[in-house]
Length: 175
Image (tube, rainbow, N blue to C red):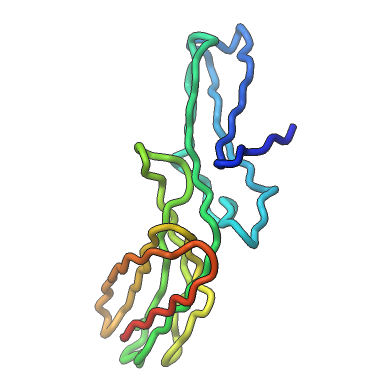
Protein backbone atom coordinates (compact mmCIF):
# COMPACT_ATOMS: atom_id res chain seq x y z
CA UNK A 1 0.00 0.00 0.00
CA UNK A 2 1.48 3.37 -1.06
CA UNK A 3 0.21 6.38 0.77
CA UNK A 4 1.15 10.00 0.15
CA UNK A 5 1.89 12.92 2.37
CA UNK A 6 -0.50 15.84 2.67
CA UNK A 7 0.13 19.27 1.14
CA UNK A 8 2.26 20.26 4.15
CA UNK A 9 4.35 17.09 3.90
CA UNK A 10 2.62 15.44 6.83
CA UNK A 11 1.82 11.75 6.71
CA UNK A 12 -0.47 9.74 8.94
CA UNK A 13 -0.64 5.99 9.27
CA UNK A 14 -3.17 4.10 11.36
CA UNK A 15 -2.65 0.44 12.14
CA UNK A 16 -4.06 -2.18 14.43
CA UNK A 17 -1.94 -4.02 16.99
CA UNK A 18 -2.80 -7.64 17.49
CA UNK A 19 -3.63 -8.86 21.01
CA UNK A 20 -0.37 -10.81 21.30
CA UNK A 21 1.62 -7.66 20.38
CA UNK A 22 0.40 -5.56 23.33
CA UNK A 23 2.46 -5.10 26.49
CA UNK A 24 5.91 -6.36 27.27
CA UNK A 25 6.74 -8.87 24.55
CA UNK A 26 9.84 -10.08 22.80
CA UNK A 27 10.47 -7.98 19.73
CA UNK A 28 9.75 -4.37 18.81
CA UNK A 29 8.25 -2.06 16.20
CA UNK A 30 10.45 0.08 13.96
CA UNK A 31 9.59 3.22 12.05
CA UNK A 32 11.16 3.09 8.61
CA UNK A 33 11.12 5.78 5.94
CA UNK A 34 10.94 4.58 2.34
CA UNK A 35 11.86 7.46 0.05
CA UNK A 36 12.25 5.35 -3.09
CA UNK A 37 9.42 7.18 -4.85
CA UNK A 38 10.88 10.65 -4.31
CA UNK A 39 12.62 12.27 -7.25
CA UNK A 40 16.36 12.15 -6.59
CA UNK A 41 16.73 15.30 -8.70
CA UNK A 42 14.68 17.21 -6.09
CA UNK A 43 15.44 15.61 -2.72
CA UNK A 44 18.46 14.39 -0.78
CA UNK A 45 17.26 10.87 -0.33
CA UNK A 46 18.01 9.03 2.88
CA UNK A 47 19.72 6.31 0.86
CA UNK A 48 22.65 8.70 0.46
CA UNK A 49 23.40 8.27 4.15
CA UNK A 50 24.14 5.37 6.44
CA UNK A 51 21.30 3.91 8.48
CA UNK A 52 19.83 6.42 10.88
CA UNK A 53 21.03 5.58 14.40
CA UNK A 54 18.33 7.92 15.75
CA UNK A 55 15.46 5.98 14.14
CA UNK A 56 12.61 5.39 16.59
CA UNK A 57 12.25 1.91 17.99
CA UNK A 58 9.06 1.23 19.94
CA UNK A 59 9.76 -1.43 22.55
CA UNK A 60 6.25 -1.98 23.84
CA UNK A 61 2.71 -0.61 23.47
CA UNK A 62 0.31 -1.28 26.33
CA UNK A 63 -3.02 0.03 25.01
CA UNK A 64 -4.65 0.21 21.60
CA UNK A 65 -5.34 3.95 21.89
CA UNK A 66 -1.61 4.80 21.88
CA UNK A 67 -0.63 7.63 19.55
CA UNK A 68 2.91 7.72 18.22
CA UNK A 69 4.10 10.92 16.58
CA UNK A 70 7.44 11.09 14.77
CA UNK A 71 8.81 13.80 12.53
CA UNK A 72 11.25 13.13 9.72
CA UNK A 73 12.82 15.78 7.49
CA UNK A 74 13.87 15.02 3.92
CA UNK A 75 16.03 17.86 2.65
CA UNK A 76 15.39 19.48 -0.72
CA UNK A 77 18.48 19.17 -2.94
CA UNK A 78 20.49 22.23 -3.92
CA UNK A 79 24.01 22.99 -5.04
CA UNK A 80 26.59 25.70 -4.47
CA UNK A 81 30.08 26.24 -5.83
CA UNK A 82 33.14 26.11 -3.57
CA UNK A 83 36.60 27.21 -4.70
CA UNK A 84 39.74 26.14 -2.86
CA UNK A 85 42.58 28.55 -3.59
CA UNK A 86 46.35 28.63 -3.04
CA UNK A 87 46.70 24.96 -2.22
CA UNK A 88 50.38 24.11 -2.46
CA UNK A 89 51.14 20.96 -0.45
CA UNK A 90 54.38 21.32 1.45
CA UNK A 91 54.62 17.72 2.57
CA UNK A 92 53.01 14.36 1.89
CA UNK A 93 49.62 14.13 3.52
CA UNK A 94 48.68 17.80 3.20
CA UNK A 95 45.09 18.15 2.00
CA UNK A 96 42.13 20.47 1.59
CA UNK A 97 38.62 18.99 2.05
CA UNK A 98 35.08 20.36 1.67
CA UNK A 99 32.01 18.93 3.44
CA UNK A 100 28.50 20.19 4.05
CA UNK A 101 26.33 19.54 7.08
CA UNK A 102 22.58 20.07 7.29
CA UNK A 103 19.50 18.74 9.02
CA UNK A 104 17.99 15.57 7.58
CA UNK A 105 16.34 12.64 9.26
CA UNK A 106 14.40 12.09 12.45
CA UNK A 107 13.50 14.86 14.87
CA UNK A 108 15.80 14.40 17.87
CA UNK A 109 14.33 17.20 19.99
CA UNK A 110 11.47 19.66 19.36
CA UNK A 111 12.22 21.52 16.13
CA UNK A 112 15.69 19.99 15.78
CA UNK A 113 16.54 17.18 13.39
CA UNK A 114 19.53 14.89 13.09
CA UNK A 115 22.40 16.34 11.10
CA UNK A 116 23.97 14.66 8.11
CA UNK A 117 27.38 15.40 6.63
CA UNK A 118 28.23 14.93 2.96
CA UNK A 119 31.81 15.07 1.68
CA UNK A 120 32.36 17.04 -1.52
CA UNK A 121 35.90 15.74 -1.91
CA UNK A 122 39.54 16.27 -1.09
CA UNK A 123 41.94 18.32 -3.15
CA UNK A 124 45.25 16.81 -4.18
CA UNK A 125 46.10 19.38 -6.85
CA UNK A 126 46.98 23.06 -6.61
CA UNK A 127 43.60 24.81 -6.85
CA UNK A 128 40.22 23.21 -7.23
CA UNK A 129 36.66 24.27 -7.92
CA UNK A 130 33.72 22.17 -6.76
CA UNK A 131 30.76 23.45 -8.83
CA UNK A 132 28.21 20.98 -7.42
CA UNK A 133 28.57 20.89 -3.64
CA UNK A 134 25.41 19.32 -2.22
CA UNK A 135 23.39 21.53 0.18
CA UNK A 136 19.87 21.62 1.61
CA UNK A 137 17.65 24.24 -0.04
CA UNK A 138 15.69 26.64 2.13
CA UNK A 139 17.73 25.72 5.17
CA UNK A 140 20.77 26.43 7.29
CA UNK A 141 23.84 24.57 6.12
CA UNK A 142 27.36 24.46 7.47
CA UNK A 143 30.30 24.39 5.10
CA UNK A 144 33.12 22.47 6.78
CA UNK A 145 36.65 23.10 5.51
CA UNK A 146 39.25 20.67 6.80
CA UNK A 147 42.87 21.11 5.86
CA UNK A 148 46.20 19.64 6.72
CA UNK A 149 49.15 22.00 6.36
CA UNK A 150 52.62 20.88 7.42
CA UNK A 151 51.03 17.93 9.20
CA UNK A 152 48.68 20.11 11.30
CA UNK A 153 44.98 19.41 10.70
CA UNK A 154 42.49 22.24 11.26
CA UNK A 155 38.75 22.44 10.69
CA UNK A 156 36.74 25.60 10.17
CA UNK A 157 32.95 25.81 9.94
CA UNK A 158 31.00 28.45 8.04
CA UNK A 159 27.22 28.63 8.45
CA UNK A 160 25.24 29.70 5.37
CA UNK A 161 21.57 29.94 4.53
CA UNK A 162 20.69 28.48 1.15
CA UNK A 163 17.49 29.87 -0.37
CA UNK A 164 14.83 27.72 -1.98
CA UNK A 165 15.19 27.41 -5.74
CA UNK A 166 18.15 28.34 -7.91
CA UNK A 167 21.04 30.21 -6.31
CA UNK A 168 24.35 31.70 -7.37
CA UNK A 169 26.22 31.00 -4.16
CA UNK A 170 29.95 30.76 -4.76
CA UNK A 171 32.35 30.53 -1.83
CA UNK A 172 36.13 30.76 -1.90
CA UNK A 173 38.58 29.59 0.75
CA UNK A 174 42.35 30.01 0.90
CA UNK A 175 44.78 27.33 2.02
